[in-house]
Length: 434
Ligand SMILES: *Cc1c(COP(=O)(O)O)cnc(C)c1O
Image (cartoon, rainbow, N blue to C red; front, side):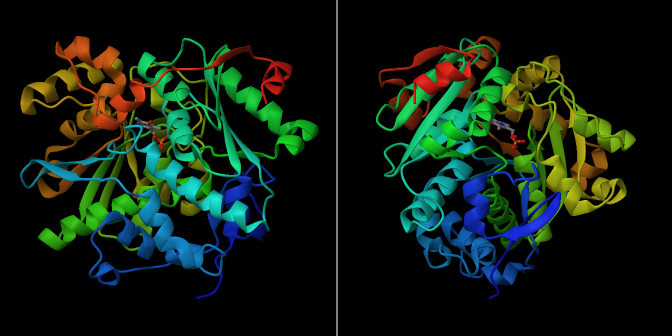
């Protein structure tokens, strides 16, 4: 197999997968994508049923010729070691793809654990980076917990998590601050945007970045995106093997990583039919599909806070892949969901099946219920469940009037002591903590 190379969505020279993973973003500000997409067929996955088995088959061409090629099976088994069940809710029509059974109860565990497993091996190899390195990440909630969990106690690496003081849910805050060892948790007096600005300033400060060997683990890293295609492969193959039909997806969307991974999976030859993106009141994607004008804007706070994104980064990858707005419209459609609709969706679904979902998953279920009648009848749909309801207890419990018990792994984290330092949104304050 020839070595796979990666290039920036803005052009430029190609790099290896190791370089793409370690640098996160391309030097020109673009996002790394593979120079070619392999084409597979369902038959290529014969005999493969578990997520690690399917992920290894799917990802092998993307790691061809790299130092990780021979270790991909081991990486997949180690990183993707929790279930991603496709649960049928309404026979022949509706399933839910549950991605919240990982250690921090959101789908971000998939990408974070895979990226951490890759980075640990790349760093110990010594050719692409010299340990110890510092992974620095700004979070509005879920990403920081997944990254801290994935990197906790890994040799040669430490993690610095910055979160906005008082702007994350109490359970999210606990997940960001319960680690210790090689994880430093910093509460920043400010907004999420201040955290993100501080991280950018730290990377731009040559002395600070050099001394600490700063590395990023943000959601645009290609090493987080690739493994996400694997759960779409697993779910669609499972459905195809049972029914001979393709599966359609509704995907709660913010930065468009999860949605883009599904587009990749379909391009790679998996039996996937429609892809519908569900957003909250942040609507640059809907507006782009309607008008052909890409107008990113500041984000609006909603109940589905992990999707409060006014400038979805992965649109750059989708536009690069599609070329123009006409073919982009053939690839995906999108529907926006208001906070009032999120509330009624949470209540309706609880009434219908007795199940409590998170506010993000509720946007997906709302969109499914509002598809055109024929769309719903002619296809089998899977709504992607992106987080466990117990992570958003302060929203979900009062609406449904019942307690939502956290899953065992989340409960174990909530029982640990919480430790963090509080800093002003200034680079000097951040530097003094490193
Ligand atoms: C991150 C996140 C999303 C949005 O996913 P993107 O890949 O950014 O589109 C949706 N739901 C939850 C719970 C999340 O944590």
